[in-house]
Length: 234
Ligand code: 5RP
Image (cartoon, helix red, strand yellow):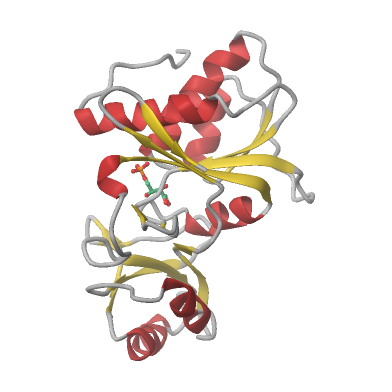
């Protein structure tokens, strides 16, 4: 069945959908688009699929198997080679956004591909519902950190020593969560991340860490969905 614009199931989902519809407006004919992962990105893919079926010519780089499957189902041609991409715009959701437009991402476990694609794109558009806006990163949402399974306990101890937080191995239904790259995720609980840029640099020194969910200084455009439409911050 061809996906179509579905009725959102909640107010927050409608906010995500409005943000995604606005983000889709930034996609133009001939572009290569990085497609994020998560419920907001699903709305984007469905909206882009409708435009592709109406004649829009784009290619997309997916950030997860789920995103690739939905994009294929929606008729969006994918670039999945390992060549150096020329991505015009990457569009993705986020778990937290601070006033400087720094992000926490990785709630869905796709942070590694998401960061590679965001870093390869000329512009990075972030779409969220209003609950993702926070005065400071941390607190209500733990920071996802992708680590190699070998020695993950020692890596967790080093992360706790560096950050002062509590690193918890992510599980789903009692099973250790594995990323698409075969790594595991440590969710780092910190009451507040005072200096996200410094924390990212410090965490990147720790052996065993593959990538963190801190997206610092990467956001080109923020789109926040609300009851009537979507607000854009450049
Ligand atoms: C996945 C992500 C998502 O972008 C983030 O979790 C937001 O998800 P949603 O759009 O479902 O609220 O980082 O790794």
